[in-house]
Image 1: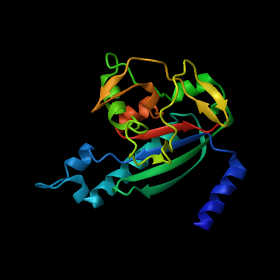
Image 2 (image 1 turned 30 degrees about the vertical axis):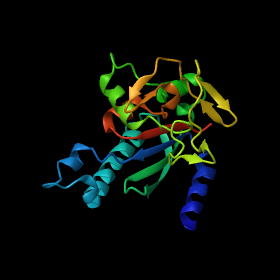
Image 3 (image 1 turned 60 degrees about the vertical axis):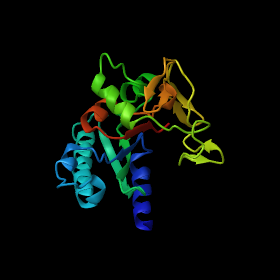
Image 4 (image 1 turned 180 degrees about the horizontal axis):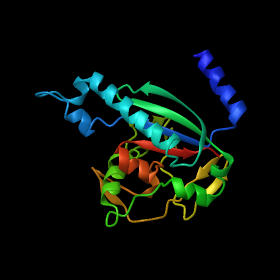
Amino acid sequence: MQQNYQDAMAMVRNFGKPDLFLTFTCNPSWSEILNSMEGVQRPEDRPDIIVRVFNMKLKELLEDICKHGIFGTVLAYIYVIEFQKRGLSHAHILLTLDSESKIRTKNDIDKFVSAELPDPCTGLRLFQIVTKCMVHGPCGTISINSPCMRDEQCCKSFLKYFKDDTEENVNGYPIYCRRATEPIQVGKYSNDNRWVVPYNPWLLKKFNAHINVEVCA
């Protein structure tokens, strides 16, 4: 672990600070997993299949990012794979972009990251994925026993505030555009843009999973 840390710090000294932070979480409802079940088996019965499919998806994700350049030219990347308590593997990825691909303005942020519910009339599939995979909570006063609650507050700082425009750097973090809209029903609760986890629409539509994309300000 110490050697991995030293390698990561050497990359930062050589290539500069990271520009993007991604969290890619396995989706047990992927067709590759469900089609491999036998009889009454459920995904949680076959962790071997889950990790194999996730590994294939992760390699494809990294290829899209590093070789096909969906965020621009990647100088360096580093990632670590972890396993959540419920058995779902997920990867934390840091990306360092070259000088021409750096994310410098709010227009650059809006180009790659969205924190709003899509319009179901023009993008139904993306809307379905976002409402299933990218809506946080409920937590706070709605559900004080939520796993994200620490000392009666959400450790992920939800719910967010409505914001008409993106701001590049506020206390070290970008504030994403979250326009005020009518709430929609997600499961048993009504949600709006204040509960949306930031994501990249293209990646979300392709991989149909929880993929949190954050700009490193």
